[in-house]
Length: 186
Image 1 (cartoon, rainbow, N blue to C red):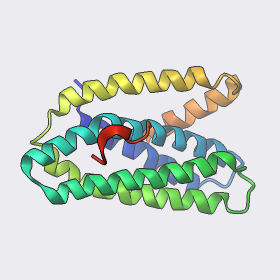
Image 2 (image 1 turned 135 degrees about the vertical axis):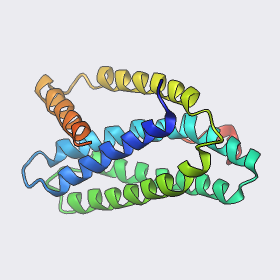
Image 3 (image 1 turned 180 degrees about the horizontal axis):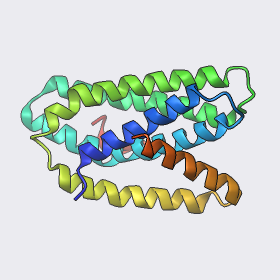
């Protein structure tokens, strides 16, 4: 049975591996590494925003943990920054002067976000959420998002899809929808 917190930790490790692969890679396939990382981040942020953060907010409200509520608000804003940088990277070519720098800034922001979630938020929530139920919901949603991504990108060549899948597998082996508009800021 999937555990939501462990799923998120695994996602975190995948993107950290992709960041490391980018940093150590001098070849021309940096664009593919960036594309793979952006796809993973898109899926991950969607799962957190649609499923995990609402459950976390509810648990923190029940615990009357205002500091935790602030952590959720900050996480939403960090996701916003990731989405902005991701959108800019998607429009750029890997040969653009600031491409590597922009991706590095994205990576640093995401690493900081991961550190806060894993070091502060997850430990608070471990005993106060149903991680298995959330994990099931997240796994089902993740499959739909992956299918949508595979079906929505028919213009990519088979070779490109295979290379991207290979990079994801390598990262794994080495270890969004927008904020709810009608939530009133919660």
